[in-house]
Image (tube, rainbow, N blue to C red):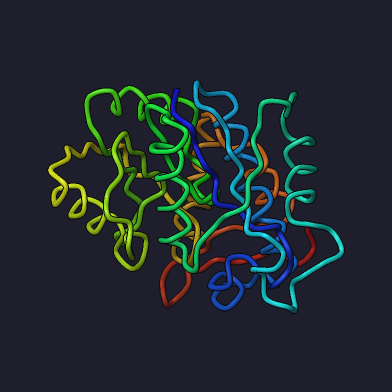
Length: 254
């Protein structure tokens, strides 16, 4: 069984997905609600898979002072999980440790593999809404014969990174992390396998592409991430043609 750590933050306005706030018509509160919907779909996919869910949260003292609250991040995220999943008794909630995203992800994976002795462990970021149960279970199968399994996102990113052996994680999730993770695996003499390409929502371009795909899947009556889809439709988020090309719009009357 693969332990899948979701590196999560509490969905607070202005704290999460800052590039979306800067580059889309969505405000801080709407972006926070989108992040929560993405996170809920991630938790649900992992819970439905054969993996073990670990919510790896950023503790309050690591948050910027403007985004701290009387409610501890662990409690806030536990409440979201409890409202999303039928049973949270087996879900682990543990604080992230490290000074950067790469350090926190690396510390989590290394601890799980070397200290807890799990057979495989993965990190995800809770913002890849099409990472389904099928994809997660496929990754677990690939980790039986490959030491590293990576799910590629657009622009050189990754939405899933699984390991049965640790690598050098220094700056491994910075910049073009897909290529860097693969290079670090090769440096350690490890085999890397890949999952299907799937969007990870970070920028206006990411969201624009995803909204188009989501609405097409709804029209075709295909499976969609339920919480994220509900948010997109309730907010009236769509893509229209403009003189400059496809443009993300929000229906103000929605």
